[in-house]
Every structure is written in C-alpha cells, then in structure tokens.
Amino acid sequence: MEQLTNLSLTQKQQLPGKLLLLETQLAGFQFYEGRQVVEQLASNNKLILKRDTENKVDINAVEVYWKQHKLGFIPATDNVVIGQMMDRGEQLTAYTLQLKNSFNPWNCVGVGVGVYWEGSL
Image (tube, rainbow, N blue to C red):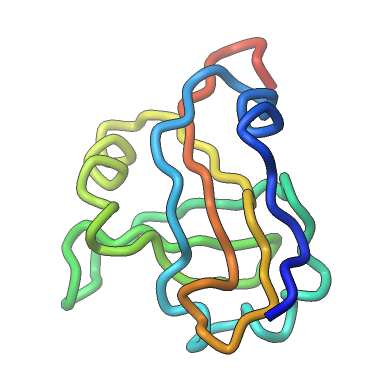
C-alpha cells in the first residue's frame, strides 16, 4: 500500500474556509467511479456533496462527487449532522484530504467537510 497524499494538520487548517466539521473516509468507493479516476485526484481537490433523499437504505445519505464522477458517500456513521445541515440549506464544501493506493476501498480517499462563509473561498 503506497500512500500518495496525506495532508498535515497545518495544511488542513489552511484549507479554504474556517471550520472543518468532519474528516472521514469515503464509503462505497469501489461501487462507483472512484477506481477509474483515483489517479487523477490530488490533495485538496474540491468535491461536490449532494443529498440523496430517495435513498431507501440511508435517509441521511450524502453523495460525494469529483467533477461529474460519483466517488461514493459520506459514511452513514458520519452523515446525520451533515445531511441535516444540507437539508437546512447550509453551504458545505468537501475536499480530498488523503489519497492512498489501497486494496481496501475504505482507505482510498479521505474527505474533509467544512462550513465556509462569504469571502473565504
């Protein structure tokens, strides 16, 4: 397992915005387009969060995209507050924090989700 990128705490604090709410690993990476685009990802890539309100398995499901490619989900163990904030219209942004070449899909992409306010991006 070769580690490609791992941001330090200092680098994480320098991400756009002021408040990192969540640091987690992507869920479902192996089932979507992640494996096809992982070589193109870099640390601090902006990710897109979308609520999946029709998900029958997880009512708080939050999908994660890079450009038009679905990479997976915020894990169910971490998505309750993020989903509720998105439902209230809060502006959340996600970034890649950690990328690894790993046979374990749970270890491939680390994601940071934060709150950003006007003028911080």
